[in-house]
Length: 446
Image 1 (cartoon, one colour):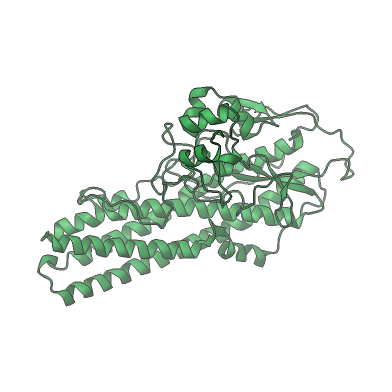
Image 2: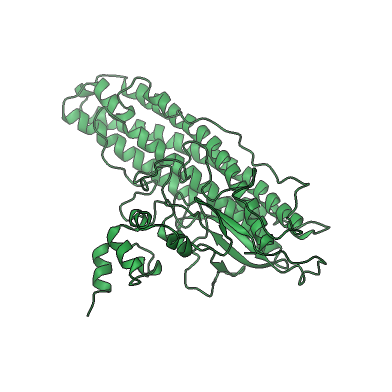
């Protein structure tokens, strides 16, 4: 990327931090609804001594509890839709303003129609399914696990208090604990109208700039998929903060049933809250990138192609690592000089994706702008500023053996360093990570 494209990417990376803050604020609203559901379910369970219930009364309790869960999940989905509908217009406005500032467009970049943007909220897919379907799946999963814990408690002769602890956890304040994530400002700001790309200087050292973004950016606390959290490797639980989950073979996506929770410890609703947080984050990322894509398409006369930006750190999954800096056509999102499918695009390829959609505009000369083309620039990484042309493959090569062994696994790292495999070889044709045994079989010496 040149300095102009780097400036555009920087603006979207800075904005991605505001989207994380918006996501955190929305999560807080959803968790308040989750806490209300927890309290209503607790009250429902405490209506009598469950261990004395007959089959018919127990069935009625579960049906009534299912209705409570369904009602609250409908409220969560409605709240999410309301927030996304407001955000999608902001995202389109932001993208248009970035293009306007970058290319000195006197009349301003064009915006997608308002009705089209509203439809994006419901039509955007996250890992192949619409947000509404993921909320419905989480609703069903919570209902199933609730009924399972109640029935298990009854079968083991537990008291109502013990059964309640299966649902909300040991602590009497467990329901309130669902909302322990701080709310943050919820409106991503527009870029500074006085700011403009540094066309008169040769490059941008974004990693050194006081207000510039860093690819390993600090995110709001508790935001799924953000670079915060443990540095020892990706997490395996739904809603975990630092993991790109879908590309990890053993990871669980939000909406899937989590591991069994020990009686009286975490409580099933804690897992439901983690799933909801992950879905909020993924919805924000997917819809924001979809709105940005629509804005790029609305200004097709300015755009040369789309650019996929992955995060240069150890939490980035292989699905995203192999797409870093890869280019795609504006219409149809077809790969340009590579074979990696769009697969939903940045932010939507899998849950908790942190990738950012950017663009390469047409040259200033082609656009009739009488300014010198900017020179070489840099891009940020977890180790500081690097060449703007550095791909994830180059980034991996710049690390030592221990880092590569931690990221790829010792066996894969050894084969990678021996030039027996590439990043692409670590994935099969369906995008699933290959096991070490599969790799060894595939590249076994004759």
